[in-house]
Length: 138
Ligand SMILES: [Zn+2]
Image 1: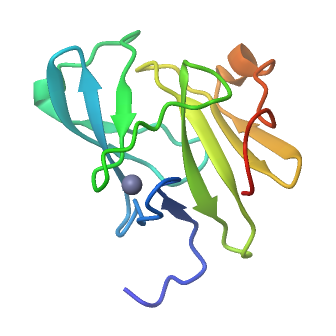
Image 2 (image 1 turned 90 degrees about the horizontal axis):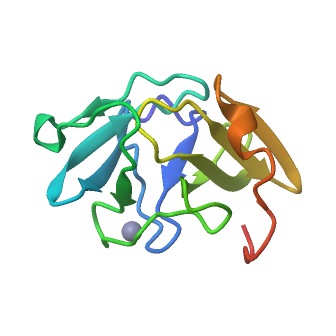
Image 3 (image 1 turned 90 degrees about the vertical axis):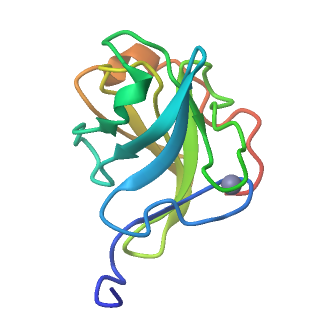
C-alpha cells in the first residue's frame, strides 16, 4: 500500500469509487438470477478472471456487471456486449476501458484522447464499436 502510486486505477464511471483497491478489479456480476463478485486482472491483455462459484459461468455467457458500491450498470454505451470503467493510467492519463461481457471472450479497449488501444485475442470482434459516440468528458 502506498508504494504503488504508478499503477493504473480503475473507477466507477458513476460514483468514481476505486474498483481495484488491491491487486484485482472487483465488480458485482449477474447472470440471469445468479449474482456474485468477479475479480479481473488490472493488466491489459490478462484474462485470469476469478468468478464467484455461485455465478456458475460458462464460456459464452453474457454477464451483467455492476459497481459493487453504487450498483451502477456498467454496460458500455459503445456496444451492448461490452462493459466500461474509468481508468487513470500510471502516467496520469485518464480514459475509459471497455471489455467484453462475454465470459471467455478476450477483448479490451483502452480509450483515451481520441485513441483506442485494443488487447486480447478477440479484439477484432468490436473494432467497429463507436467508442467516441455519446461519451461526455473522460
Ligand atoms: Zn459506482
